[in-house]
Length: 304
Image (cartoon, rainbow, N blue to C red; front, side, top):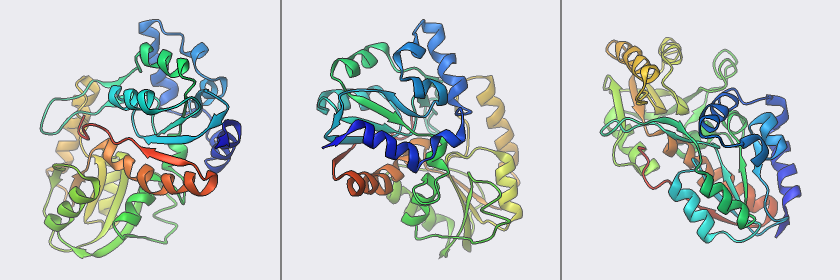
């Protein structure tokens, strides 16, 4: 058992959340999804979270016995935490909102959607805590989402200030020589997904990769990777499958680029690409620093 304030203080310091200021994405999307449904998120969430959109979001009992780890607050993730969690337990997530990213072989998603008020009420009734960490986790040099993928793939980050210091969301690495088919098989096994999203070319000699956990559907990043000799671009999403004008425009832009690139572009799903850090590096971090039990909550469907 550990005091909540001690755990929060160590998390805040480890990820240096104050230095990032307001989270660029969620400072926009949280008001956008909650205000139309007349939910007073500024009163319901903790003050520090309201200021930064990272950190302790909901404050439960003062003593933490177990830490649950997940990526998105899907209904089933929250139901599992509410059912299995005891007073004081903490849910550590990458995102404070669910993002329906869409399925490359199924339906497109809605984008960001709010946590249902009934779940927020149940979390408070059971005195459960929620802590989320977005960009500070992505950018962490030892515990980051990209680093977790590199470690699992036995990929070696390239020590070159002109590459990995230039864009903190893209990690350039070398890997043991492989080809597209074998790399896809490795990724499907690593992320426990039924299929990848693929565009571009099949490459016989892959030794240099770019890793972008989460939303990697940024054509400028892909072009930069290609210019730097990357043969495979590994990310959560290579397409935007959000069913609105923004998503369709992003999809069109990506497809225009994909038709000409010599790289293999491989998506493993937004949520699966970011879950890996929870079940490896963050799980170990919580157990080492606080000697608490950790409980993993995988998403019920990776392509959502």
